[in-house]
Structures are given as structure tokens and as C-alpha cells.
Image (cartoon, rainbow, N blue to C red; front, side, top):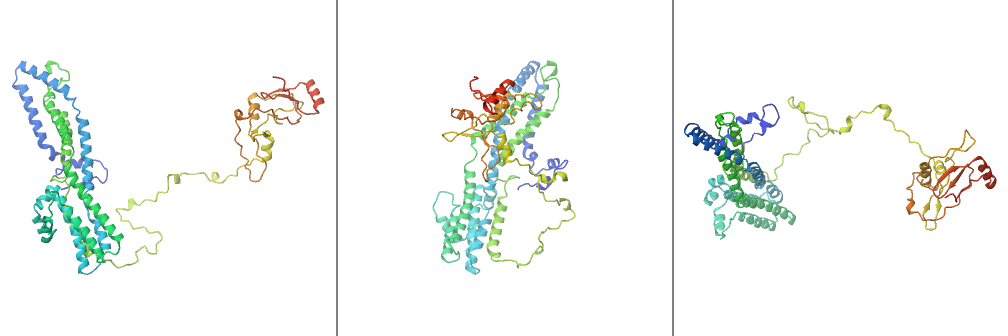
Length: 508
């Protein structure tokens, strides 16, 4: 019988798990106490022989043997081997539970798609579900000792009402050396096809739904048969068992308390009860017993599956669903929330503390000052300002754009207005020379900066002639260096070009 304690640990509180330690049924104490008592008896027997029966030279030899066993017992990988084995067993145990055949879905499909409120329709539905439960019973009595003890022969199956005498004769007439748990599933499929031919099942889609769920039901039965047939490899089980028992056989000698007068390392105290060795035995041997109990959950242990209960429940529920509840509906009425757009079921006084407001999101708790919650208008940069501050664009014959190295009106402050002209830094001039061109003024054109064309991809073409501009500088167009003109040079320059900027191309 499965031991359920879920209600005891529903709430985490002080001493919640400690209360479970006092239970006997399904506990590790009930599972391990015999092995634990045997280990204690053997340990104290060896301790008594060492203390009171051996001579001095024999004691010295026993002490050497004890230290040898204690040293090399730790080389046995008990934790690794046992941990992996128990993990495999627990995974297999839960998969077997998920493979238990439950006829509920099949019951719903039969009740909805096999029509007829007369005696024939009722007989078809009940027989279909009886065949499904018979298949589950045959596989359970093949893998579960508890179910087999309840139905040891096929006569007991017939007497229990799962099979009629005529079906028994037909079942025995099928000569097959294999397990015949699948035979009722074939009967189910044949009877469903007959119901379709009689018009009890309206269309092929309904028949296909029923047969698909029958296949799933039969697959669960096959999985139970496979789990019972193919176990965890015996060699692995033997390795784990030998590792655990050999480790504690070595502990019987190696964990003995030796004479402190001999001065052996780690034997400064002389105790009689090996507390930590007993705890180690409790954990490791208990771990092995857990695997031993879960490796086949269809036995008669405390935590094995209730296979007989499954047989009773499935038969009663499935027959009720397709017979008594066939087309049985309560009257349709307006619910109490018919006119309520936001229904909320009431709370009792004990459950009122669990009423919580709906969670909206973590940012709904963020507070923002009122003056910072108003939308702010962004300042727009005019097209004309960008065009004035950006260099011109010179086109090339292949369609690429080459930004010419021209001097912006804001590049060098004019001389004679507040002091002498000051040259801008080299990096500033280079940055100004590689600014992206301004987009042409057309409708719908964005004023965002355009991606600059890399200098290494520009063709080697002569620069375009610079525009005439009055400024006080000379430019070397090969590297973009800017040098201010002196007073005399500026006068000569103004006289020659009538206020235009002189570009010196021969300074390099």
C-alpha cells in the first residue's frame, strides 16, 4: 500500500519533517532494522574478541589488520556507484507508474461516439469497456504478485466477471506460446468495427478516435510487460550490492577502536559505540534498500503500487461512464455569475488570508515624480544649419561621392576682429574634412547624418577647385594642413584674387 504523507508537508514549518521520522509504516527503520542489528552484533562481537580474548601478540596483528582495512576501504567508490544506481532505479520506477493503463479517455470516447439508448447500444458500450479492463487485468496479473494472488487462474478471471465462459473458450483456443494480454484489444477493435457497420458509430473519424486511444491503452500494457521483462542489467545490481557489503565488511574490522597505549594515529580515544560508522551504514545501506524496494513497484512492499485498487477502480468507473451516465445531463441553468462581468468566488474566514490582488508586473510598483511624467518636445535641427556646417559634395565619374577638403566659414576666426587668427588643431581639421555630406533638400529626406564614405575606397582623382571665400589662411590640399597668412601676404593675396582664399598646392 502506498504511504501518503503529502498533507503533513504541505506547509514548511519548524519540525515539519521531523514528525515524519516518527512514522513506522513505509519508513527506512522498518526496511533496514534487520540489517542494522546484524551489523551491530558483528561489530561488538569482534570488539569483544579483540579486547578480552586475544593475546598481546595477536592484538598487535589484529591492530595492523584493522589499520590496513580502514586505509583501503575508502578506495571502494560506494557513493558514486550507489548514487548512479539509485537515480536509475527511481527514474525507472516513475516511468512504470506513468505506464499504468487508465481507461478514462477511452471511456469518454466510447460514451460519446457509440450511440444507442436501447439494449443493444448499452451492450456494445459495456462490452467494449469490459474488454479494455480485461486486457489491463491480464497484464497486471502477469507483472504484479498481489494481482496474481487475487486471480491465480483464468477461472478466477471468469468468476470475477471480466470474461464470459464463451470468451474463455475462444481465448484458450488461440494457440500461442506468448502472453495473450493483447487478445481483448483485438476483440475491442472488431466490436468497434461492427458497431460502425451497424450505424452505432456515425463516421470513420469517430471510429479512428476510438481506435487511436485503444492503441495508446494497449501501448501502456505493453510497456508494463517490457519493464517486467527487461530489468536493470544484473551485473550492475551485483556490482552495487558487492560494493556496499564489502565496504561494511571492511568497516567491521577497520573501524574498531584500538588500544590508545599503542599510539596509533587516529586512535587516541577508546570508545565502544562507533557512532559515525553506524550513521554511514544507515545512509549507504538504506540507500541500497530504497533501490531494492523501488526496482519492482508491483510487489507487496509498503510503497508498491496498489494494482488491485487500480483494477477495482477502473472497472467501476468505466462501466458507470458508458452506461449509467450515457446521455445523462443535469438541467441547464443560469449560474450565479450570469450577470456579473467580474465574477469572484467567495472566501471563508480561514481562506481570506490567501486573497491577493492580481499581479500586474514588477514595473507597476515604480514611482515617478509628477513633473517628470510629461512628454517633452525634442529640438529639431534645421536643414539649413546642417548644410552650412557641412562640406560640399563633389561627384565623380563612377557615381561615388568625394567630400572635398574645403574650409568652413567657422574653421578659422577672421583676423582683425578681436585679435589675430588662431589655427584650429590638426585633429579638428581632419574631422571637419571627413564629415558626411548634407543630403539634398528634397521632400521626405531625413536630416539624420549619413554614413561617411571611407577614404581608402575613394578614387584617386584631382580635387575640385575650391570656392572663392574670403579668409586669412593658406591650405595645403594634399594633407589638409592649414596655416594662417601674415599681414603682407594677406594684402598680396587680396589683391590677386579679390578676396578669394589662396590654396597653395606646392607646399609639400
